[in-house]
Length: 369
Image (cartoon, rainbow, N blue to C red):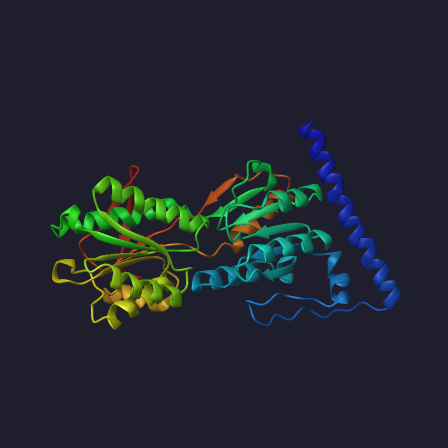
């Protein structure tokens, strides 16, 4: 039965490619010319559009990829988009149709249905949230178009709705950060019940938020830390600033701020300093320790060198080449691993913690970054 389904999918794939070639040839005869113009990219956060004739000219020779990005909420997301745009170029044999979801799942679902209508060869999806994808991914499967997930996952009972996923182990990132906090506070002689943490979370329901929040919540429970509050900052600097200002009014004993990305950490530091407090690692002297995730934002890395951000857990955004490699393995008939994780580091300029151990694995802390 599985073999018959695979054969049916392959036949449908060949039919789509043949249809593209026929359409392109007919278009060329009708025009009486072969247009050689390339596509023009403007803003990386805007959808990439082609003229009808350009699509006809390219479709017969290039592999068409539809990429639905969830938005442009952070420096990490922008770097991730750039990596994808650079990987799927004409020079590499691809025609990319890029759609910016503007942080809305409905926009992404519309984009996927557009890709299906355009008969793209592959769909790449960076989902806004984990739930609510079964119907549209089922439509892609019915059309015989493989789907590759990037960065975040989907919560689907049928894992065959997508071919594979590539991204970070977000819960591991949270575990590593929690291990660093534990090691640092122990080195400084700070008792567990003196550790008062607030978590400025990312978009609720996203894979990054779920994993990083879980990593902290479990560590707080296991270590006896006081997790005062968990509030979403939407992965943006502005919301991070607003949330931190409100948290400082609610709690007068907060000494650790766990920000689920660098942009929110920058906003939180603005709020801390605006309130007349100091962002830094010396908890015993009344400073508020800020830790964050990503390691892409240049200002955040500068803050980490200064000690205003005490530790950053890297989240590598350069998925473009990895996704292209997965597509090429599918083209060659191989079956890639379902889940493909990237390796990531910890960054800190503080000398107290040189490495952390999580689930039996040792992770070095990089001080030269």
